[in-house]
Image (cartoon, rainbow, N blue to C red):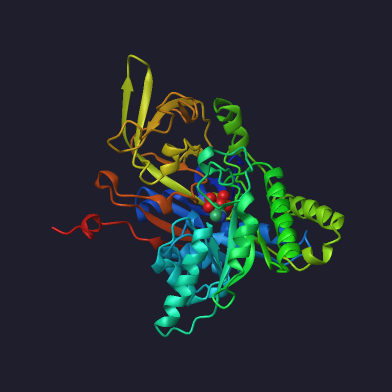
Length: 478
Ligand SMILES: Cc1ncc(COP(=O)(O)O)c(C=O)c1O
């Protein structure tokens, strides 16, 4: 624990969680520098209290709509077992995207009833796994996949397994754009996900054909990740509601749930000192402040309006709403501590380069989406940030830099830090909890870092041990 009280509140700080004490960064009161001394660098640090806070914020939003809400944490955002356990203990359910994530969710203690399974390319084995477990919903991504689930049930029964009809939900792609990255938009007809609106009714008719094999319980859309506006959510919800209505009229079937997917954004620009160096659309997207309450109340408002007009409010009143939040649960609950390992100047340009030990092999989106993670000094967290540095990671790849190597200006060219940063100074990349640890890889033979979870009782538990060199070769056969 760090002594001293928080003395200053920089824009990036979050009272009670991310603070400055004795000029050091503290996380839930724990000194970041002490963590690196104990667990080495680079190091992921997560806060259980912040995960709980984020989940409570979601649960609070449920109180604005008078429908039951099932929150299914999108485990792709971070499926470390201790993080999954923290989410389970905080009282919400889980979404998985592969047999591996399903295995992890069951192993950590989620009940089948708490699990939904998305994915475009599920293998027979993965479907069998989900059918045997009897999960809440397999979200089917195409008309073809309906048949795969039916075959799975038949196959398993033929082998003597006493499996119930598999519960499935159909995933739609209704052509709804957002102001997020194209790679993070998933409801466009150019995206690879879901069933087109023009085929929805036929898809449901097909899915209702063999009720002894599959039970169709819902309809699903995920408009994309880091969606900054309420409108795409409302549009998506309305579209699903209207499909539900048509399906009821045309087939007599009533769906039990509408799944609005994930995508509630996180504000990566609480500190806006470098925000004006980002293109306007990136700035709006990365700095989005969107309350889940606003998303749910607007979605419900438009659906209720449509239900009233159709005289079908009784149908809406039977629906459970599902959400699949990932980023909004875990992104700001995690950060990366990294050490400056090398320094150089370029007399020709006047640049000072800081070379850290955190590369894109542990922060992939900094490279593939040019995602902005605010950078601070962990040992001089409260100092003045007026000096500019070129910052780069350790990989033997020119693209392993904290700026936009393609010169499209999607990241600031320089990072602002205190004067006279030297090798061995510890820096912190903030808001790194989502889509980072889950995407790490061993490029350049770099052992993957450790991760620590600060518990609600203030204890720092190691939740991922640092790789050894042996881990680099454990799967190689020679
Ligand atoms: C189907 C699905 N649901 C939920 C999510 C989680 O999104 P987010 O982390 O933005 O909440 C994703 C991620 O893009 C997804 O593909």
